[in-house]
Length: 333
Image 1 (spheres, helix red, strand yellow):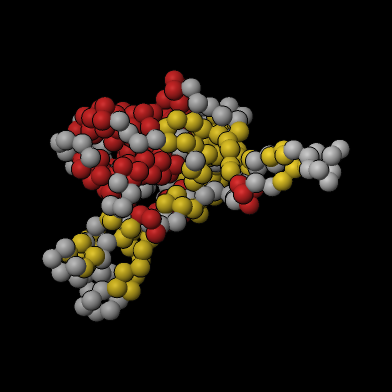
Image 2 (tube, one colour):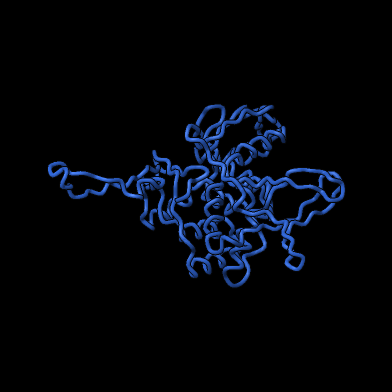
């Protein structure tokens, strides 16, 4: 059972845990085929639909019942019980509020927050060979631009890779919800697209939920993947809940959504939003030291690349030359 970094919201319930299983050869083959088409988000959704077996709203401890024994000669009346060795072991955790119907699960995985979908995809593919969880990377020193390669050198018996098993899973606290509130440093003004240039709308704040796999899929269908900036804005638009405290519907988002995010004046506002959205998930920041100038900095490990590398190694063919990025804020084409 895995605790989700950000819970899945379905109706009025939050599902905080999931059971997963290793992918079958059929799931691997189908996932690879979707990946070859460049449909990264669809690829993850299909993979999770075939490898997730249950969602739970919570867990509780299950303690074994004491074993009843026969009365002794010294105490012929009362029954006695004795503790079994199992009672001294850590109590087993069982899920409550279970959803385990395969059809429902295939529908629900699309509503997973992207960070959670990425977490599950990594955990599932790593189940196949958990001992092989090294992640290679090429990092550039921010001071002298020297290239630092972290890889395994079998001949020299040196391994400088980062390992998935050492990376923390940072989970959203139960007291928080699945929404992000933002106040802009400068108001967004939307004006008429004519000679009058009249002010139509002015926005100072907005609220969005953590974008889901379905949000990412819808955005990709609308704008494609070539322009990663437009794709990012379109994903944000799908997840937008309100502006200036007023709820927005599909019609409003269709008219103003893309324009709203394109006209944010201070780029740092989007940087702050990105950091808030990436607060929970697999911790990918790792300390690096430049061998040339001794600069120490934190670089981001490409765990999404690890998923596609592992997918390629465990199935025939290639998984496609693209990454999902961390959530939706660090996409690469």
